[in-house]
Length: 456
Image (cartoon, rainbow, N blue to C red; front, top):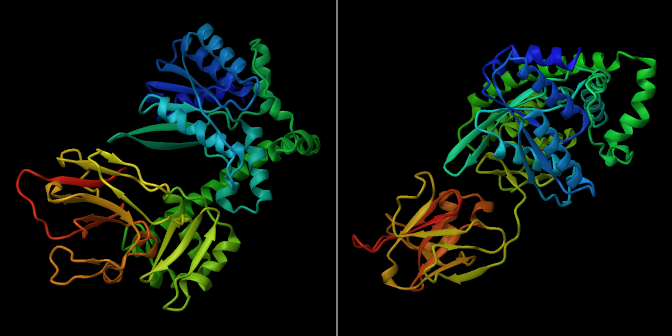
């Protein structure tokens, strides 16, 4: 199938047939250049009325990145296509490849720059799908992984107090690399070549350069066959997700945890499937099968007085109050104490969210935890640690050590460790964290009120 035929099929069907803004993620390589050029041809033929945009992301990972950026800008000027470009900084981090970090940064910036409700088209083709399938097969993936690249999905991004949604599409997944190259040659296109594509130390390049030529010389239709297998795996995963969503909804009792008693009723296969689906709904990468096989014996069935932890990558399964939680790996924070000196925002050490101080609660999110303090009653100190200090919450007749209140309120240990103590005149007047605030009895007049909230 030619790129033009594939695009005609997608653009003639919903929702692309209703699109006002079509955006090409334009790297300057042959795949995205063919996609951009074919869309420009279709638009100029007056068959479609969408506005065509191109966005180029400059990663700075190659010495030729500036040249690629200039090339993309010139191509878009020649095609009369609206062009945007942005630089993103990518630094190597533990437990994640530089390639994956660059991809995540690229998608984030694409969402930021694209018009709201626009449709971002990506240039991956059938041979890219074959590579992805084989990489997932090498990793021992199940139906979800073997479904390879999604043909379409939506991303919603918070922009201030508003949310912005854009839609991603891969309209060339049924188009072979050969047909992409034939189109480029027929149209006399000029594109950039990323020198890193020739480095076989990357798994994808090793497949493309050393493995696939041998396989495809024996089985020329391999990419097409694997594409069908990927579609079947994706269909199977969709059905599994539908059942998993039903099971999850039937057992869920809180927004961020699952009851151990209900999870323990599932057989091992469904336990793994439901937990995977639960994680995917939160945007958390799935653990390996080896990790999931430890979930039941090490966490769900651990002794009643135990505080089990099961970790993978930078995430942890935790059990508390007979509920299963998944949390980012906590960072050990040092105790500190800081005097508030009238600033509107206070940055805190250790990567903690800071605090906002306001004389009015008009700008506060109604779902956000906050405290109400009278600043005229004395200096205000913020500290972390020292949970043996006594505290008398509003509505209580008793004063107890903070750690006893934590136990009574069933506050999870990892939340306790990030709870800030607000002190005024050497007395604890409030506790605050991202999820909750606990207020001492108020001594306020109608004028002097200070609202202390967590920064979002």
